[in-house]
Length: 97
Image 1 (tube, rainbow, N blue to C red):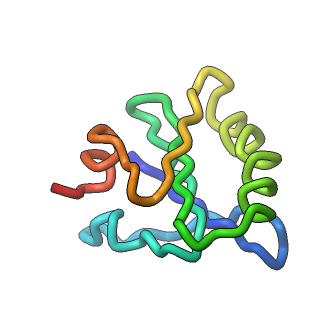
Image 2: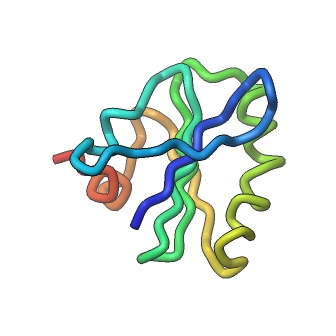
């Protein structure tokens, strides 16, 4: 199961996004946004940063990502992924070919 959070830049916090059952995760990606994908199966938090996000948004994310991870398990690893540099594992997780 994948749980998705999106950075709310105005509130400077992450908000959980409700995902419809048959919507592929890659359709959420937006160059102006930062998302966290919590992958309980692989015990991993993927931090995806769109190419148009600001340094301030990335700084806020750095400050908050550990608290999101800790809600699930402190053993989860955190991996940052920049738009355009997605790894094969990330692409598989969000359903990209």
